[in-house]
Amino acid sequence: MPYGEHRGVRAFDLISCFSSELRWGPIVVTHRPEKVVRQFEYAQTIPPQTMGVRLSFEDIDDRWMHYSDHLAAGRQICLVPRQCASDYMDWFFKISHSFITPT
Image 1 (cartoon, rainbow, N blue to C red):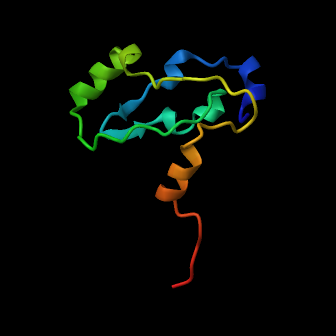
Image 2 (cartoon, one colour; image 1 turned 90 degrees about the horizontal axis):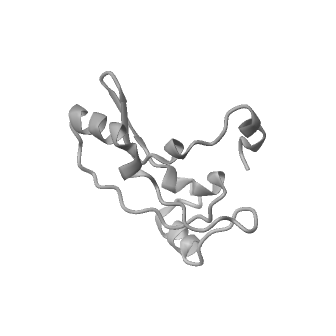
């Protein structure tokens, strides 16, 4: 598990599962931990579709202030390393670019 040894220094906080936009001044980034739940020791499932709607700065701040309403759901704890839902790999190969081809 990435950063597993570091948890003795900095524990995993539930707030790390916050899923929405974050901002620092005029800079806005999307934080989607549901795409990497295996790093949090959960079985990987297919993440929900992104909304594609641009939030106002006020909406972003409000979501952060009420972060517990916007947590990525951790469903099943991993029993084996790199565990994922049975339909995840089929979905992954449909949406990913698994091969590089020369042009």
